[in-house]
Length: 419
Image 1 (spheres, rainbow, N blue to C red):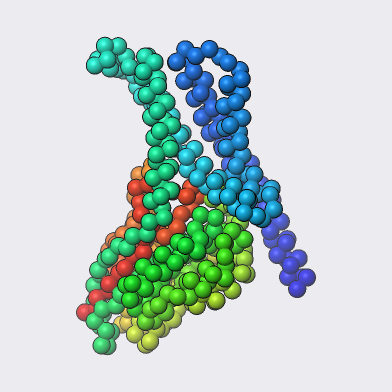
Image 2: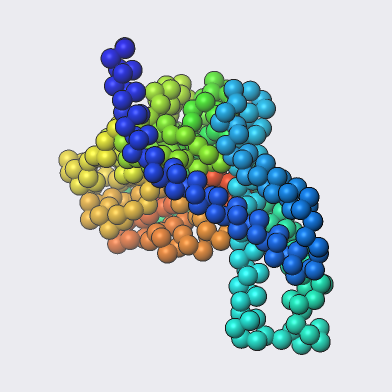
């Protein structure tokens, strides 16, 4: 046991040293962004013609510093209800900060365009931006827009919807004409997602009376200690009912890494999984497939892949999809779970019928929702690639900011027809 712990400590130590520069770089970026927000006060004060009162500027700087430090403060406190609340607040704060930066950038771009193109807001009789009314409207736009976006996103993230999809596979399965599969992913159990959320999810799943439930990774949000009640959570997930059972793969967040404001600081492919995660899944009655295949009820295959980014084994190696499917009977339906919806053409070539994935969160919140369609061939929904269907869910939980704007938390019900 001591030797095992020693090896584990060495791996953690090496990973920490390797990611040291990355952590300092992210801290530098965070300081720059907070400074950009703070300079917004000076620009606004200048435009308003408000005298430079040092006490006011110091007060605003202190408030911003207090808010900005909330994402770190909880890490130095012992585990308690106060620590939990501070860490949860940090997840909301980072979402609010993102929107403040976004709205300030919009205002700066408007100002820049006005300067370059000499825009005139003719309905005001003079450039609106130069008036005190215009400057006040800018402040309302930035702070009001940021607050309302964060508030809406926080409330909306807790609403789990059910989406329905139908696909047809050109294979026959004895007496089975169709099968109802529920796809879930990205639970991110931790500071932002807990027991109440999981009970809502389980109730929605059972309401569908599914034949099979597949969980496509990111069950945990890195820090196992962040679970509000591990025993109750595992018991809740054990309530999922289906004909053939519940199967899962792990994702890139199902490894032990430090979280700051919901973001994992580590970036190592050799990150290790907390052993308690495996114990949790076993108690929850969920079968985890790690580069493994299973012939279920002699009717169809289900293959689960190790995550290509962080597989939790201290290595970046995993079997190719060709290796995993080479010895399988291709006359039977072949379903695959892989956390990330990548290498879609390779899955089609390997004879896969359906690939179930998550990871993208469909962007989770605007403006990241604009980027995701360019980052993935299928960032959300159902897309046919050759003879294969790629099915990607936006996920149940959240990563980073505890908000959803422009996307939904969902369980995805896929009815697979055979012919």
